[in-house]
Length: 145
Image (cartoon, rainbow, N blue to C red; front, side):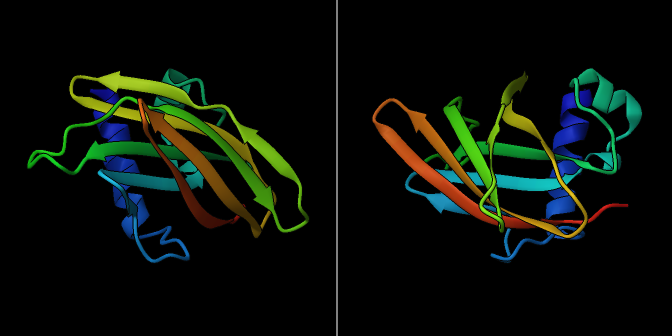
């Protein structure tokens, strides 16, 4: 239940408060519809952050990725291997430590990230499942509350 609330919350944020530079909340990568969002951890309720082991801080963010198979009408969630990095404008690179969350039919991946006010990160996230492999790229500017 908490996982579904987190997913719905994250997807709602992506379309309203945190529209990214690409103007969308997902990208079509081959047969996959990849949904993504990066937002401040303070937007999470304390109990939800605790449940997922995420720090709530004005200097901490959360990356949320989900991969759907767009070849099927119901777009089932996909389990993938995921590795990612974020690079700020100074060239500093941070490896993202993704945690897989599975709840019923939903599968998504979350990772924490530290930031300073108005820091911009460019994300490169490699997704792999069998022979299918894609890289999700997006940019996000973070603000301290």
